[in-house]
Length: 95
Image (cartoon, rainbow, N blue to C red; front, side, top):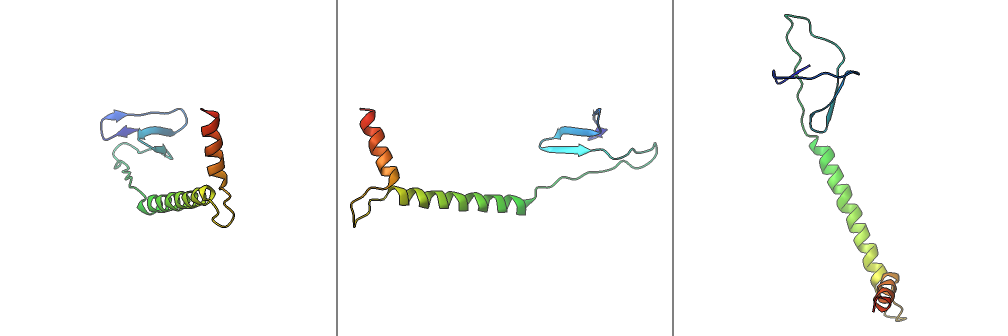
């Protein structure tokens, strides 16, 4: 396979890895002499990236809320949340 008309690439199994960062090319056939070369275009899947970022933000926000809840002191009972107890215990044992 010729990449950008310059780099000659080959593979023992018809899969070219990392010719384009993050892309594996699976070669399915050959071009005969005189035939027009195949052209391949690669684009970012913006919707997929957006969905991944939204999923990450949602998971982070859920984690943050749970950690806040676990660190609260219950005003009715005065009982400390689990994370506050763990932090207090760790601080006492490190002294």
